[in-house]
Image (cartoon, rainbow, N blue to C red; front, side):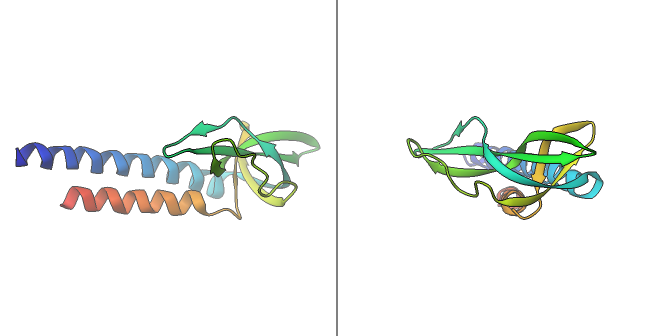
Amino acid sequence: MLHIIWLVLKIIGISFCVISLLVLYKRFTLLIFGKSAQGYIVGYGNSTRGIRGVEAYPYKVKYEYQNQEYIAQSLESVSIFIGDVPNKNINKQVIVYFKTNKPEVVTIKEFKGTTILGILFLILGVLTMIV
């Protein structure tokens, strides 16, 4: 029985590490290799339901690059209770990073939540595999 619990913990730890590395890879790829532009948060994308009555809405950001205007969805999001209406950071001026071959996906430089979450998942995954 103890062997099964140990195996399940290893699988969970590996899963956490893989998820965190994917999130961190996406964010840092955009920050390091992407182009930057100044934009404004203009709204929210479709929600993702989480656990315990929480929804996450990705930010919609309007920005201009090479005289063309884009409305993109960010990697970052705002979390609210189900039934509430999101209104955080609307019209906030931000710096976004994106790839020119996929300008509809951005990361917002000022929002570090994605990085923090990725690092926490990585630490949690490593600790789970050690135990």
